Image (cartoon, rainbow, N blue to C red; front, side, top):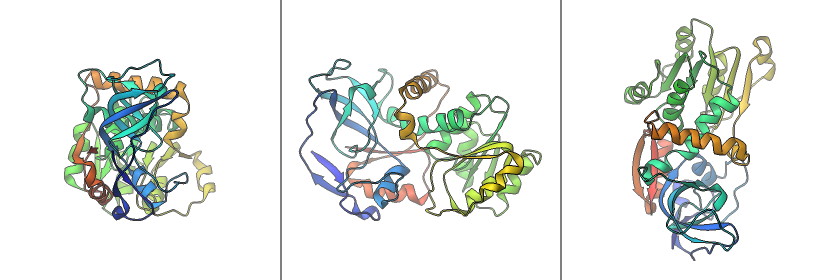
Length: 324
């Protein structure tokens, strides 16, 4: 089978197409014939050697796949070959086939295609748990969503509304991206390339600041977002797309009882009592037409390097997908 493998860390050019042996499932494993692969910032961090946990080399990226069960291990009881599924795995998704644990598989309703399905798990679960589990969003509270035209952003804007947010403030880098955020349900639109964007956030909240903020850029954006927090406000950090770290003084949070909280989806994935109900809830929203997923483009697996370049250019909208 073909796969994209990296043997060194670096830019998109280190992603190489290779021919390797198809894996064989054992125990509770199933072999998935992959039909769609979700591309995420975590993949670019893996490629650069900047991921939250160490990336062993050689390494096949890809944590988000949708496809068909092709074969099963001897202890598998929950699924049969031919079952259409979507799942999250630790690695190995940039390939024709990958192994997954049967207990992590989500069967797909017939009306859900592979592209739509693969756009949901990683970014949908991230948006869900950033807002609800870590951000503890309550009805009527205000939410600030950065990169609101991206994969997590477009879902977070919609979920914030479904969870009862009083005001959703969306930031993005261009008018067309802000128009997409507005289509998703954002109440206030702010271009964060403007130097005073944090003042615009404060004005939109009557000077009080936001109750929950989603931040994945890092650097100056992080520092300005802290200034946008309300008393008892919660800032949830789930990435550093700029590659910049921030000088931060924790004591600055004390006067207004503010919080800065880290989020890492694999920790949620290890708690089935958190993972399964939230994914079922997301699929319910999707099936009822209450949640819209935005596909930014579908590309052949061989163009993984091109897709990484597009993703990191911040010029894309919605979910980027690879297809074997």
